Structure formats: structure tokens, C-alpha cells
Image (cartoon, rainbow, N blue to C red; front, top):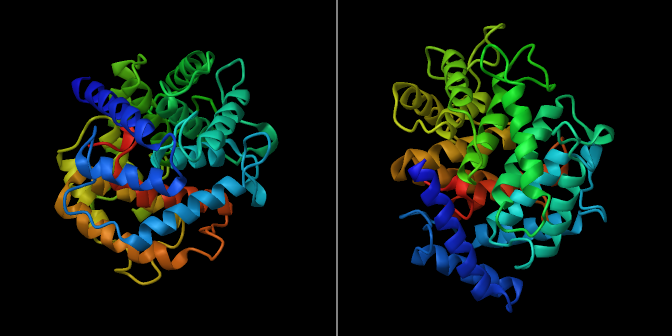
Length: 361
């Protein structure tokens, strides 16, 4: 708990400092101040040796501006079959938070306020957060990303209902963990898969960082489930009940699931990182295009927590892959929805700014 408490305190101090320097400035001023604050070490630093290119900073600003333009009046985000989806809204909100804005201050403060209102309005009496009319095939994805967003924005909003709804969301995750130790598409205890499980464990980690109670038993059972999903090659299987080959996207998620549980140096982590290194962005042409943003969202976190040597090589490579994919209007297209691809790309590229507690080392 000590490390998590320090992360939360560091983030609060950093955010207060950023609000002071950015409150009266333009978007450009705010961004420049954020980078200066990171380089100066206010509550966390841009990783030593990390080279965030000027082109990358410009691409992030264009991406965030695109997301702001895609927001609906109700706070959700438009685009594709996933328009008004809670997960897409939550990821877009996280991308705004990662830039240094918070509800009430910063160039995307109004966007964040509306996004937060939409997510909270989608919270059901049971604690389940989703909008049935815009749900995916697996609404626990929506719930997990929504709970993560609420936990990360907690303490930076004056919404009186935020803590209660976050607590209810966390309780639902805890209550719906299945016997294997994981979670599945629906808020039921019948089965589990690694992809849904990583969404829930990250949300629980963020909630614990924010000071909410998360039972140790829930974390321990999740850790055992994730470890059992690991294959001998270091990668990860999708479901225990259906053994299969390792794949890059879910293997990245498996490593981050363990890191989210507080495991940063173990045989499972080392073998998982070795597997991921075989899939360095751009190394195997055409490989990794399936679930591209999903895989790299987790992979960049895995390498960030791994440390400077792994991180610096990976971040340089992912910049090479992402920058040419951005379209002239600022979006990164994905079949899920342009807002989803853009939010994911912005989160990936902003990782070294370390503005969110969940991304801090």
C-alpha cells in the first residue's frame, strides 16, 4: 500500500502544480507547462532517456482535439458502431486526463466534465456501469474501463456521487469474480477469460490507489488465475478451459495484469517480457495488426514498468508505428471506432508523461 499511497500523493501534487501553471493559458501553454513539469519532476518525471519527439507531441494534440470534436452533447463519443459506448467514453476521458487536464481546469476540462457525467449516468443500481443500447458483446469491458476512469478521476471532481458509484462498481467486480479467479463478458461467475480479467484488475488497482478497500483475497485469486494462463513460451492463453497458443495482445495484457497486482519482478514477469520482446513494434512486418491498439495499450505499460532499457527501445519503436497511422483530421482509425483507436493511441504515446497514478512507476 505504501507505493500506491505515494503514487496518489505524487499525482495530486503534480496535478495541483499543473493547474496553477495552466489555468489561464492556452492549450499550447498548458501542454508546454505539462512537459516542463514532467521534466522537472513534479510528482513524477518523463522517463530518463525517453525521447518524445516533437512530431509525437503534435500528433497527441491533434488526436485529443479530434476526440473533443467527436464528443456528443450527452458526454459520450460518436463514431462507428460503438457510438455512445461507455468503454470508448472512459478511454477518451483517460486520454484527456493523461494530457494533464482535469474536470474544471485545463484545455479539455469541459470535455472531461461531460464524459464523467455520462459514465456516472450509466451506473445502474446494481453498480454495473454500461449502456445497454450501445454495449459491446462483452459489457464487462465497459464496466472495467469505466471503473478505471472513475478511480483515476477521483479526487479531481466535485461530483458528490462519484465515490459512492465507484465503490459500487468495485463491489460488483469483487462479487462477480468466478471460481477460477477471473471474469468474463457478463457480470456472472460462470467462466473467465484473460482479456476481461485485465480490465477488472486494473480497475481494482486504480481504486485501491485512490483509497478504496479491495479485498486481498480478490487480488490473490486473480494472480493465481493469470499465472495459470501463462504458456511455457512466456505468452498467455485466452481461457483455462480452452487451451491455445500464445498471442501478442493477450500476452501483453497478462503481464500488465500481474503488474497491476503489484508483481514487478518474478519468473512470470521475466518470461512474459521476453515473449513480448519478440514482438517489438515493426519487427515482424504485418504481425500484430489484429487488435493493434488493444495489444500496444498493454504492451507499452508492460515495458514502462519493466524499466529504462526495455522501455526506451519499445517507445521509440511504437512512435515509428503510430505516427504514420494518424489521419489528417487527427484520428487513428480502428474498426471498433475512430474514437477508440484515437484514445488508445493518445494513451500509448502519453505514457512517459506519467500523469495518471495507474501509469506511474
